[in-house]
Image 1: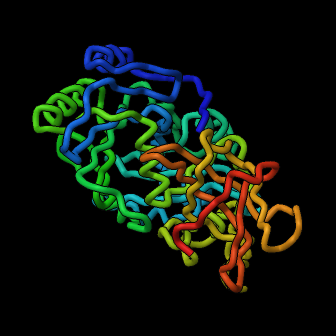
Image 2: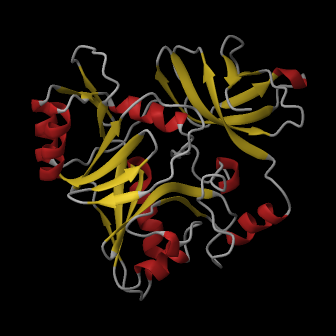
Amino acid sequence: MKLTICLLMNPNWKNFLLSEQAIFENDADIVFSSPEHESKQRIYPIVHLGVLTVAGIDAAKFLQGQITCNINDITDIKSSLGAMCNPKGRAIITFLLVKSDDAFLMILPKELLASVKKRLQMYVLRSNVTLTDSSDELCLIGLTYGTAKPDQAPDFATSRQENIVVDLQNRCLVIAEADKAQILWLEQVKQGFKPESSAQWRYLDIISGIPWLAAETSEEFIPQMLNLDKLGGISFTKGCYTGQEIVARTHYLGKAKREMFLAECDALACPEPNSTIIDDSTDTEQSAGKVLYAQNGQNTCKMLVVLQVSDTNAYSLRLKNNNQDKITLLNV
């Protein structure tokens, strides 16, 4: 998956990672050249995601009118996936929302952070709300404890001691200030965690079915097409928010005509977000769906795809204009 974003990173955190033999391949990929070992414990610097802080007396009320999840369900011990939609019910962004004291931290792709902040700012008006890009101040670290399993959905239980920790089943996401991030990193490495590339964290997000959006896929899908209802990211009882009418109508009329699936492909180069997928079982070249995002890992390319739902679950999928790149669904 090719990412081109402006890397906003705390210089002390970056210099620390360099001292730990990190190699910055581009603005979104950090790799390590350390030798392999048997431990399944891994630690990841996460640089493709950023943090948008929503603070102020009216922060909760403000967000409640803009997002699909219920802000009242977000607590110090519970985070949630969610989406912000346009008036047509299409997801502009998906995010992980975390409570931090009296503020909310919106974890989302950095490439969309500035545009989301600008759009939210339009709705602030006279509300006591501040929007701050905290990607320079707060560092994101991933930890894994074992082998990822497809369809092992995270529960997003959250704890806070020195840092904020969001549970993702067999792994967790840590949100930490730069100095605390360095301490945590050294402690975990000392305990046997091996530094791993940031791209592999994206691979694990795909395995877990977390539907991150890119510029190419923003405003393409309603939240149910991204399985956010199955992941607890949509409340159908919270009341109005932008795009709510479309989202609710889809829910009460039955399931969406398109859904998100985990898939794999033998392509050497992973397809770009929003790449077209063809279903040869229909004898037509019309689009059967789109690639949400993809990432190489463990000798294959894993991807999340949004497809038209088949009553028979019979698919013969490939990337458009490439008969060799067959796509296999893993969770039909």
